[in-house]
Length: 187
Image (cartoon, rainbow, N blue to C red; front, side):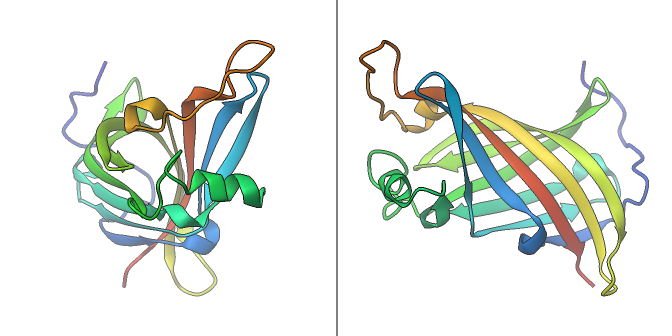
């Protein structure tokens, strides 16, 4: 059930524009591999801006990750992921997210938006868990959160796969995207 409240209270919350602190944030993903385990990766270059409204449910976020910065700690696999078999990094250099709404469902925050991956835009919902707010030693006011969603990679045109001799396929369809976020309120 979605909250019918028109506002919500969050301890330490401040309205304003927040920039992602890339040194203290991570954009990562995981996917089933060989049907038996998960491979994890991340994007090393990304950006995000959060505009928090007086009413948190009216806040917005825009974010992007540079596809060429993908790393799974295996250079040959990373190079393959940048090709047309997967992300086609030269044609589609970024993965982009633009929020369309914030809501509370069963006491949990949800951030709805449009994810564009490989030129395909689809609606997604991130589960959003506030870590809290506070000052750092340099006088910055920071906010932290974790956001997570699961997408079907084939919905975005990432259809590469291979059949295994033992049955099954090389890669799963579901990709879990996890964002560990820390942002600073602009002065």
